[in-house]
Image 1 (cartoon, rainbow, N blue to C red):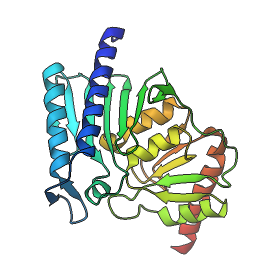
Image 2 (cartoon, rainbow, N blue to C red):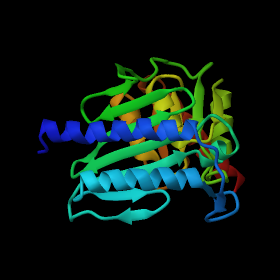
Image 3 (cartoon, rainbow, N blue to C red):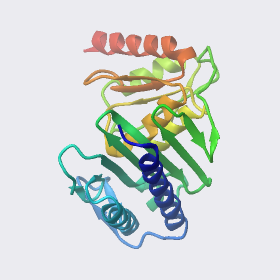
Length: 264
């Protein structure tokens, strides 16, 4: 078992890097845009600069650790060592177009699963932190997911899978609307997950799970009391939901599956 002082050292490094990255995002204009998998999948020079700096700091302070990042892949580490998952800017398209909904996301996983998570929203000056078994905090204060018991009047968040809808997405949105919930697509899965964790939305439904994008936000939501359902395939492969509406969201997903099956 890792001792308390070591965990505190890891957490302090993650928080320090999150604060630095947020300042870098606030004070930087993207000067170069490069397409990756397709013309909608872009990376900026700011993404690359932030990831390079974070990698440099982590590799110097914790040379035995593995680092897996959005822009430069997986490097370093000893067998069985902790792994950092880094997305320097989650929501690059928003960032590149001046839309204030993007984030820095950094998580640490050990042999027992996700251990630490930091998500920073530079536009709002909000820092979301979580530690396994020790709760979720927003700017240092404990937070919890929504106490809602009905979907009526609530917000559910989702994200495109890349720039395209995930399988069954439109049917899920329709069924949630039939329960009088409004679905929003904001453009950063990390921020969507922590938004559910701190009770501003009642659920986040994603078409897939990627630890680089999602681990920090998922740990935050889980530590804030949200229920997590992760499946390999199906309508909304990752669902993070406040307990009081988990049944209603599951029912909406089931109706969406039936709707799509009837139309096929």
